[in-house]
Image (cartoon, rainbow, N blue to C red):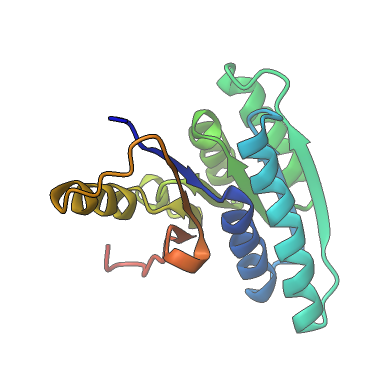
Length: 178
């Protein structure tokens, strides 16, 4: 009764990222997931679906390279995986999972590629980050605290956050105005 769980729809967040990448004209996309756990796999599934939809809407053809890390705890292996993608023509890599953000960004900087971050806004880490598929953690916290103040704390419930209630989205970055 004194705990409320919050679930964010990572498939929808990934969808937004894939659609945006395709609509921005990127035709060779990559996905690196830190593991095959459901949240990360949902990011990837949504990314592929969104990229296909964006490509269809713009009349483009896209290529997709999709991988999970065998050992995401080794930053050099993650960086090498991303470098290989960039070497094979991938323009932008969606890095799904908090443990792989830094090595994928390092690879993008080294290979002059682009990155889409995940979970929180990664844009402050590098100019190579074009956007991030983000969870609106601050909104969820404010909503739960508001309910608590009103005496309606949702104890024992799982609160779902998605695009319909502004629980997920893309971090929009304007260069020079951060």
